[in-house]
Length: 159
Image (tube, one colour):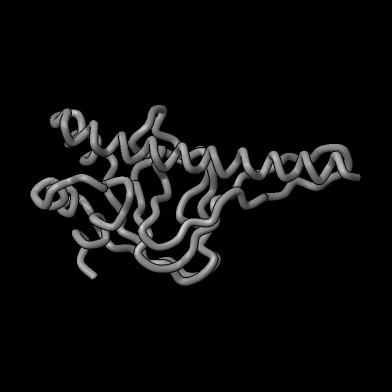
C-alpha cells in the first residue's frame, strides 16, 4: 500500500487533499518492528509520529511500586491499522507520555516531527485540518477512558 493511501485512511489526516497528503508523504519513512519491540518510551523526545500500517501496538504506562505491589506496566490502549501513536510529536512539550510496545510484527509510517511541525506552522489551513483530526482522536480516547472508569466504579459498588 502506498504511503499516501495509508495517510488518507488515517483519521488524523481526513479532509486533506492529494497535494497536502503528498507534502506529508515526503516526510515519511516505513519502519518495521518485531513483536516485543519498543517504538518509544515515556519521557523520550517525540521526534516521530507513527501511523500503523500493519500490526498492533500496546500503549502502556508505568505504575510505581505502591502498598505491596511491584512496579509494573499496564496497557491503556491498543492501536492498530490506520491509527496513530506518538501524537506528542506535534503537541508541546514534544515528549512521549506513554510507552509503545509492539504486540506483533508491526509496520508503521514514521513521520518526521520537525518537518511536520514546520509544515503545519507555515500552512494554517493544513494545521487546522490536522488539529481537528487530532482532537477527534483524543476525544475518542477520553471517551473510552471514561467508559472504563464507569465500568470499574459500577463493579466496585456491586462488591
